[in-house]
Length: 470
Image (cartoon, rainbow, N blue to C red; front, side):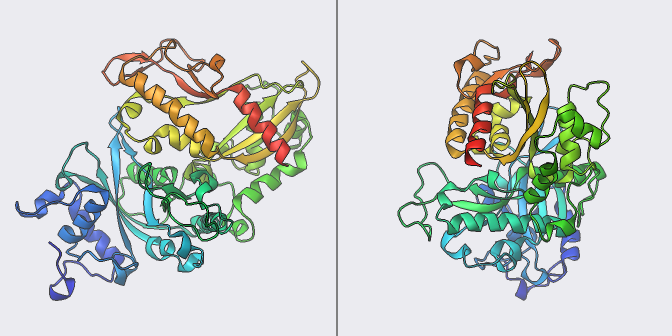
């Protein structure tokens, strides 16, 4: 049902992004079924939905040109799915795929002339509610968002792009990971077993297909603002949280460099002295004192909990403090969030799972080491950004598959999970909470909450490996 817009009067101004956005609101609360005849044959797949929106609602012809969909307005159209939580809240279902990466061509493109920048600098985002086994014509559209990438975000994304390109130029396209970067990821595309792509600087090793994408965490911040504000138009995202780095600082230095440099003056200094210098009151000996100290340093005193800062939220970046005893032992395992049993049950692909997002994201590890056995005289010993290796991510997939099988069988009990004593890098157990703390299982029953964990010996290996690489 492609229609040539040059032969008809379009119901919107094809050169005006704001006017196109206003027209898009006519799709909200509706499905494409309301705009087609019964004889129309829907296209399948996520890409098919985008083409159908172009053809049916915007009356655009499907074309293969590399520019933006609304070329005269320099604006790209993106349809992206939402899902509903057990609490009936909207959730981001997946990252926003922007453009495929051609390894041989992308190394010759600077950021400002890249397909990603030219297409995605300004986007019309149409959020729709995903439904299993539902015809594309019947999917309901929920939000329309006019999104222009903020200048500060572009500074971070520009650096992300450079990191990806540099890895390709090193002949390491096959080692690309979404954990390499902050907002702009190089996500896997296709299925296991697909043929590998040629990379220009390593003729002997092929690389999996990948695409530039805005990460789920980044998309989550957009959705969160839209839902909270009740607005359907966004040009810049006003965050109700603190920022770690100002835009002007990002012009000359990367986010990583800025944050790590803030820790340098305090290396090998005792935690209580650091607290004193920074005016942090530890008289009540809070359990999270190491996190409080680390957040104060990393954010230059602008954020009490840096994991709730603008950049950390948008990047899905997590700061974790680690305490190493004088004998080198790390006593405590590292906990993550509680398992969402409904999400695990409903997710069909490992790379679309919440656990994959958690484990493939970047971490800022702040290491405090005890100087004398039993004295708790910890000093700031090391600070570094870390991303899980592909080898460990493959093992994490086994961990997730094991959890999924047990959730689907309603075997939600400690006897079924991997245990720390199994020494499999990861395990499942509850956090120290009330025994009456329950969650909903896929069969509708209430079951005990369990949590994802890194084993303490796995954390020790991360710390020691970084020491060796320095």
